[in-house]
Length: 453
Image (cartoon, rainbow, N blue to C red):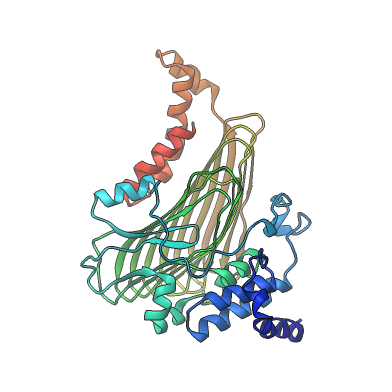
């Protein structure tokens, strides 16, 4: 495959110019990729990485339910040929008409951010005193700060995706967000990024967050479904670098329309004595397949991962989480909670991996699901892989219905059945909501759960 793949990648830019520029070069074919590269204005190193990713994309087969990773997630209804890469010259799109609840709340608290729509930048970040920090569209950052972006983008290579959608994303991403906090800077201003996607649209954006040694920051990312019920596609990525003794609080809320296909590879790497508090909210999309990984590379580092998932209708959310301990005296604590209604399904597969060097690791993972319908289904698959001999690693998973005795107890005090269920569900999610350090995000997620009920 290596020789053939190299021939394909290097020869595609020699296609006839009329084919490169033709609107018929749709989908994610060789012709579409050649046209895509022709439209880009970016450094040579980035173009080369795109070529490598496209070669991987061509070499990978379509996921099947016979594959262990996809055994519980069926994507036969997705046709990639129905979508096309966002145009490389998108840079002046209309601002979002539905900016999202989290963004609106953060702006009221003085936050600074930028917005993207359908794969292009729609509103750049406003000028603000950021103490030397950088908040830019990722494509612009690759041109203006090439050394910084090159050092961290898709590093390690696994962040570029070993699966089909990760490789697709690495080859075709157009816009995204670059956050860089210099050494020792403690940024009090929250930063945000909003990604809007219209019905029938395609977004392949990438988010790169880098904190240098001793830095501190709060970052929020919100994905918003815009008008239109036509199927849409998002294949994105998120990379987080928390250097030695840095502290990061990040909130990541996915609230696409229920006709959107959502695929994402998300990776965080922690240095010595660093700390990460990472909150994930999975509320929207028709189908979501997310791979989330935290790698504790430095001694004394700690990570807390919080997840709130809520499905209705025929939604399908599949989250694979991984806590990778590669250094001694590291700590990770993961808590995911899901609520399910109607005929929806949640699949959570977790893994704690401790390398030989990870002595004195303290790791925990838990997944709880509250099933609110006879036809909803929750799959929880926790796992441990431990090569060190001095660790404390535990996991747990539960799934169940609302306790009828609790409902009866509430009704005996003049509370209706519907009100009782609402109170029980809100109480179920309270333990994970309390772990979120960003008050506005905590309230937004609480309101979103309430509206789903």
